[in-house]
Amino acid sequence: MTDEVDEIEKTPALPEGWLEVDALDIDAQGVARRPDGKVVFIEGALPFELVSAKVNRRKNNWEQATLTELHRESSQRVRPQCPHFGLHAGACGGCKMQHLHVGAQVAIKQRVLEDNLWHLAKVKPETVLRPIEGPAWGYRWRARFSVRNVRKKGTVLVGFHERKSRYVADIRECHVVPAHVSGLLLPLRELIGSMDAIETCPQIELACGDDVTALVLRHLEPLSEGDIARLRAFALAHPGVQWWLQPKGPDTVRLLDAGGAQLAYALPEFGITMPFKPTDFTQVNPHINRVLVSQALRLLDVQPDDRVIDWFCGLGNFTLPLATRAREVLGIEGSETLVARSRENHELNKAAPRIGRALSPVAFAARNLFEITPEQLVRDGPAQRWLVDPPREGAFALAKALADLHQQPELRGAWTAPQRIVYVSCNPATLARDAGLLVHQAGYRCTAAGVVNMFPHTAHVESIAVFDRGV
Image (tube, rainbow, N blue to C red; front, side, top):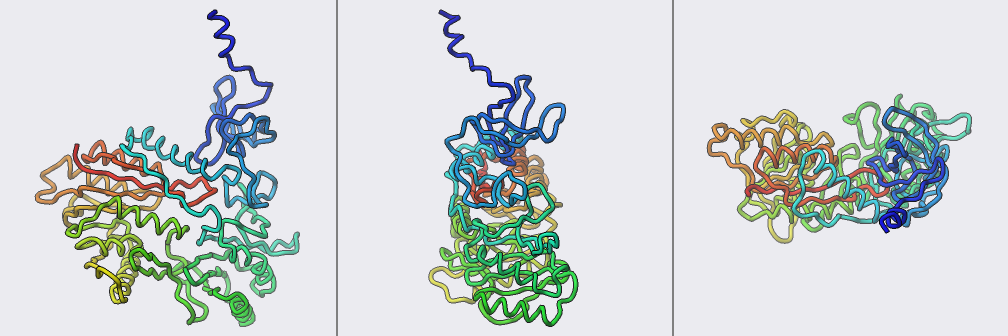
C-alpha cells in the first residue's frame, strides 16, 4: 500500500529541457530550478508555468534565460495592452509585468515586502494592510523620454529604452502615460525632426500637473530662433502644453514663456495645492499619492495637541496635510533650496481661502539626513509622531540615532521618542534594514505594513509601515 501511495504522489519527470517556474523575483523574472538544484531566472515566465528557455548567461549557482516556449500557461497570464511590450527585439523596456494580471502583480509585491522584512530583518508585521491600488493605465504623470535621431531609420525616436539596451525603442503609443501624452509621441518625433537642434536634444522630461503638461527639453547647445518658434507653435497646437528648457543641470530649468496655468497638483481632502517645477521630485502617480497621503495620516493617528516631524519632507506633500491635523509640524529636508520651496508652499496655502481648520504653524529645517546623530534628534525636540519618507537609500542614520537614544538613556535627558512612526518606502530592502533597527534596537513593534501599487506593470515596490513603541 505504501508503495502505491508513493507512486501516486511522485511528480512526473519533466521532458528534457523543460522547467517548472515556482516564483517571480523582484525584477519580474520567473524563478525555476534544474534537477541538480541550480536556479534559473527566466525573463517572460510566470509562476506555475512549464516553459523552455534559452540561457543567456551562466554562473556556478545560477543561470539567466529568456522564455522561448510555453508548455503550461499560468491562469494569471494576460494579453499585454501595449503592442510594444514583449521579449522581441526592440521591445520597450518601460514595463516588465504587463503579461501578468494586475491583481497578481500586487500580490507578488506584497510577498516581496513580507519576504524582505522577514529574511533581512526578522520582522513580521502584526497586521498586513490592504494594498493601496488605483488605475492600472494612464497613471504615469512623470516620465523621462530619450530622444535619438536614427539616420539608418530616417526618423527621430522619442520614448523609453529598449529592454536591456541603450537603444531607444520605436514606440508609437504608450498606455501607462495619460492618453493625451501618448498622443504626443508621434508629433514630438516630427517636431524634433524639423529642428536645427535635431542632434543635440537627448531627452524630453514629462511632468503633468492637474491643468498643465510640462515638457522639459534638454538641449546641449543654445537653440536657434527658428527652433524656439517651432516649440511655441507646438504648444499652441497642443493646448495645455508648456515648454521648459534645460541647457545644463536641473537647476538651469526655465519656463520658455510665462503665463498660462500653473504647474501644480491638488490634495482636495486637505484643501492643499502644491505648485512644483517639472524637475522637482513629486510622486509619479497622482491618483495613488492622494490615497497614500490620506492613509498615512490615518495610520499616524495625529491628535490636535501633537507635535509631528516630517522627515525627508520634500516640497511638503505630507507636511502641509499634517498641518491641518497637528498642533505643530517640523519639516526636515537635506537641501536649503528645497526647504525654501517648502516654506513658500506653506505660506501660499496658509494665505489661501480655506474651509475648516486653518494650517497650524510649520517650521522647516535643512539637515544632512544621512548623518543624523542622537544629539541632533535631541536638539530638534520631542514629537509624538514621525512621518518618514526617504529616497531609495532609506533612513538608516535616523533609525540608528533613535536606537542609540533608546539604548543610552544618558544621551536623551528629558527627550522622549515618538510613540508612532509611519514609514513610507520606495525600497523594501532598505525599509527592512531600518525596520530591523527600530524593532530590535529602538524599542518598537512593527504593527502594520502593506504595499502601495504606485507603479503598475513595473517591478517597483512602494510600501508603508507603522511602528509603535512599547510591548
